[in-house]
Length: 129
Image: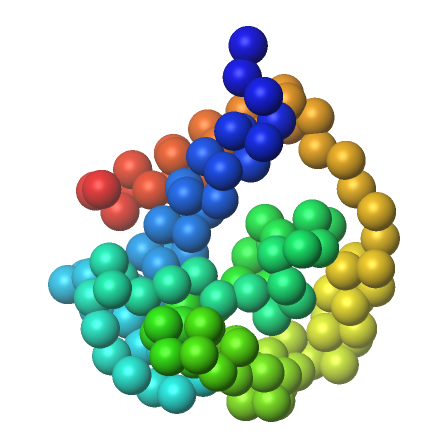
């Protein structure tokens, strides 16, 4: 039986790949959500608006966008630009719902992790990866 931490790491990997594929074009190139840099999805990262420390939004597709390493790591998410763009994109109501969700406590069971891993693996296959 796999430990939940190993399942979380596995889900992190497939979810990140899905987000980068979701936001890429037919040639695998995507644009950083916050600075506009264009690079291949393999060179980009899954940037979280609300930090990955919040399990309740860690795997939420609305909370995640492609970011370059510069914005995601060195600029710590380029938070001001991310906030303005995400608020405009989601609208105030959905943006506020995401914040409320961030503040909630969740526990993900091993079965739920396995289910989500399978779900995102299926979505990845749709991109031919």
